[in-house]
Length: 255
Ligand SMILES: C[S@@+](CC[C@H](N)C(=O)[O-])C[C@H]1O[C@@H](n2cnc3c(N)ncnc32)[C@H](O)[C@@H]1O
Image 1 (cartoon, helix red, strand yellow):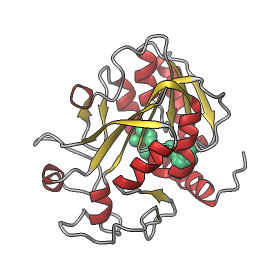
Image 2 (cartoon, protein in one colour):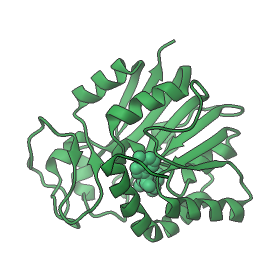
Image 3 (tube, protein in one colour):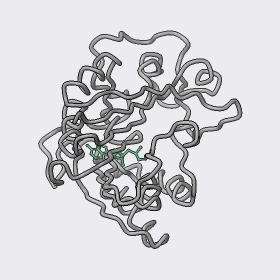
Image 4 (cartoon, protein in one colour):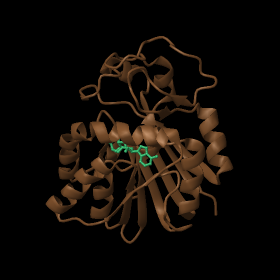
């Protein structure tokens, strides 16, 4: 699979290299009977990312990684497709499918340009997947193409506020002061990290979603519980209890 876009190639190499570090978390998440989200494991009962009834629905996970979100949707009765840019991440997903006797389609590919037909899904989701690592000006229109009218798109990413306050060094938590300009942010390559991330301001997300045919239903700023824990070090609980470090966008394709 060749992709002309440099960020797709860089991110494939990056995720193939770190996939081994996501195996244990993937195994734990596949074991869960109730979903939880993001770096603090915020429960589904608080965020409502998944539709209440998924039976018979066609759902796609864009940047599925080890595909635990896909497994939760499949167990809820959805016909699921997971797409990911990293063959190594998908290898973990395939092994977990066998371990859990749960089959669904896994595609090695770029969520910005999937091989799936127009209007073939009722629901699309991304948790720190394509929504962080793919170009929003390519994957959002692609999600709109994939969804049927009235289909829902949900994604969970770093909050824009966190992006502005993040320390650019790996292993250092976000500051309580702005570290960079809010204008002109789009593509970020952190020093020492070969990956390419994408971050938009709220205004840019709103304009892009609306121009791509979506109406925005909600923007949920995630507040972890005061006893929440995380394995990540780019933000402290103290920070995340005061300001949202991650956010959930919910949008619906216009009929
Ligand atoms: C953090 S994982 C997301 C999976 C899981 N929800 C999690 O949080 O661990 C990010 C995934 O996005 C995938 N990814 C990055 N760019 C992508 C693209 N353009 N298309 C599809 N997947 C992509 C990576 O290969 C990686 O598996």
